[in-house]
Image (cartoon, rainbow, N blue to C red):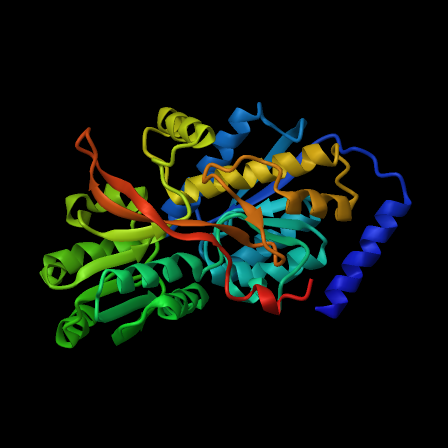
Length: 389
């Protein structure tokens, strides 16, 4: 990290020594998962980002915005090739959109080496929060462990003594279960890792049944979670073991696909569509009007990523060549988040509140999330102290 930080300081000094000129437009590389089982997540991030641009009149920081959208195909190799094109050929000023942490870890280094700012609208690997933190990486969502930590605390508070855990075997899956166990005080009777993208869970359900837990915790994003929840409820296990998950395994995209079997599932999130603040009310109403569906937390994160970039470009008056000034402007987070209070920690990951949500029916009869209360107030991740930035 010493080399990266010195390089950043040198570049910043060079920029400050000259008179930075305002750019004539802002170019953003939107690299996300837009096909396959995880496509719904990337589509929501993209749609949330685009709604923000509609609210800003197609501009970022009062400059015309050009967003180049590309599908990473949930493949680290494909993502690296596309990243190379976005940086070298398209010369983007910012990048965003990656959903999965293994993809983020694959593209991070070339982005940072090119001195391109990355604003994460989802992936929050522990590596970039701790020893591999980087001046060019900002996360506007959460650190991977955080939502899971909030569920671990909730399951403990609700008196569940035995829990089974299930997650895919990739960086975010490992962060997920580490976060849950950091705050859960009961007994973990099963800890199961599956293949990323797995859709049939019959063997895992048999293992859970044999372990006889009174709670089941899953982290299965996208189509993985949809299939598991359907199979879990159909197996009858939900009658004996309450189902819990992070927000991304129990959000509106999953609810639309599963429906009433999700009633009674608890989950945690840094955002909810019923949070009572003006920017969130506008976001939710306009998202439904624009896309015909309730937004998910992914959409809220895409929206906030655009608004953060908008604020930073505005605050540096479009002088994007002044990297140190841009970094300070991003760090200041001078925008109103749809989640309410928001600020960056020293590692450029959020310090924010986390909420407990319950899937229930609203007054219109829709199966959806209802916010039950705050689990953590001004919560920071567990890795920031290892960041030397």
